Amino acid sequence: MKAFEYATALSTDSARELVAPRGLYLAGGNDLLGLLKDYLVSADRLVNIKSLPGLDAIVPGEKSWTIGALVTVAQLEHSPEIQKVFPGLHDAAAEVASPQIRNVATVGGNLAQHSRCWYFRHRDTVCMKKHGDLCYARNGENRYHSLFTGNTCISPVVSSLATVFAALDAAAIVLRAGKETRLSMSELYQRAWDDPLAHNSLNRGDLIVRVEIPAARPRSAYLQASDKHAFDWALVSCAAAADVDGGALKSPRVALGSISPVPHQVEAANQFLDGKVLDDAAASQAADLILKDAKPLEHNAYKVPMAHALIRRTLLKLKGTA
Ligand SMILES: Cc1cc2nc3c(=O)[nH]c(=O)nc-3n(C[C@H](O)[C@H](O)[C@H](O)COP(=O)(O)OP(=O)(O)OC[C@H]3O[C@@H](n4cnc5c(N)ncnc54)[C@H](O)[C@@H]3O)c2cc1C
Image (tube, rainbow, N blue to C red; front, side):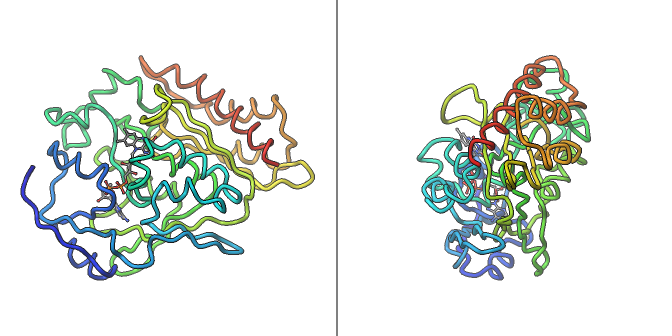
């Protein structure tokens, strides 16, 4: 591994000063240390942000809840309040990796984790995410890749938390150039949709400080399909959130992960579901709308029926929470 300095930041201001110009933030280290060891990223300095005060709390609120960027995935999984108020978030957290990883993985690091594309992760392959001019997955081994993309790279976003945060209409609050910037989940990944080099829309030095979740959708559900029951990312993940009024959905949102560089959401499907009393037919129609423009490749066409089934099951699970 290339040598680097190590510094511990005690305030968000010092974190931002210490990270400039060629440093990287170190939270749980689950993703970052592997990237460094495989020479996929480099930094002159790692800035340990785990001692930043006040970023490790889950704070309930009447209008919105705040999840600090240093809250661990295990904290989300084991919080009885989260399980009660945001069951979809609890279920997504409980599916991440393994208990050992969840104990150290942070919300900020989970959202900012890099592509899992095996061509990107192979240190000798110079793909488009590494300034190459070819997406090897596009005409190669693409079974884990996207059904939707805005550019040539087909690496999908794999953060399970991003999927459920998108359904809950949560926003990441990012310290950027000294100011707090609010990014919806779509905005947090928009650059990866547009630009093959990007994993997300964060600029170097941007610090996620918290996630804010509106309390407007008290029903939420999450399901994923994976090759393995544990210690694995999702092949497809799906989250749905809504309020329920007299049995009918109010302000529903559905989001999918691992099929696009951004959490995949289709406004027409959300509108279609609004005011509906859910049944199999409505859930199936919503799934049709969400997957209408999918562009499967040679090895990932199985994701279309898998996503369709997950959308239906997640919506029916959501109904069950009402
Ligand atoms: C076998 C395995 C299975 C996994 N399965 C899943 C899964 O199913 N679902 C899932 O979502 N994840 C999964 N993961 C990924 C894991 O959850 C992430 O690697 C972890 O959450 C990263 O968090 P961290 O705190 O360790 O981040 P780090 O490794 O410390 O950081 C990751 C990246 O985020 C940046 N960063 C960290 N904190 C901030 C911040 N506050 N602001 C800005 N940038 C920041 C770092 O600089 C780095 O680039 C899996 C991992 C493994 C090894």
